[in-house]
Image (cartoon, rainbow, N blue to C red; front, top):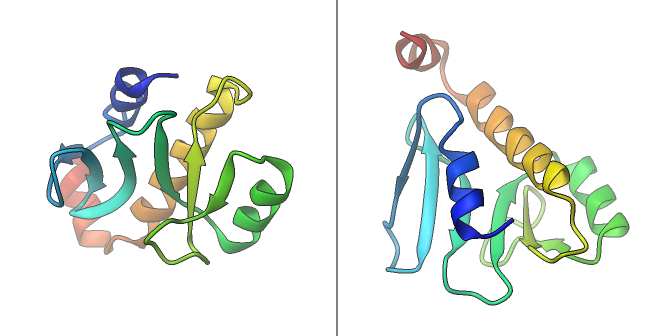
Length: 117
């Protein structure tokens, strides 16, 4: 997946928003004003930070060379994924889904209800 395909997929998530709050190259995706993904639009190869359950994060790091502890993030809860041809699009989409779901579930019920309207 390239930058545009990753961006498009992240924006398919309900109530997802995008912005560049940190600099001109780090595209940030949020739901309910909480980050679920950061995409470096200029890194080659492309890198993306995704929230992850701590146990699953360790498993993914052991299984995939392209998955490392989150760069400039809480390494227990975030992975940095280097998008290479060795990764399947379905895996990337699953990891984005997982990140989004973790953040969605952490939102207050009232916020989730408001976003679901």
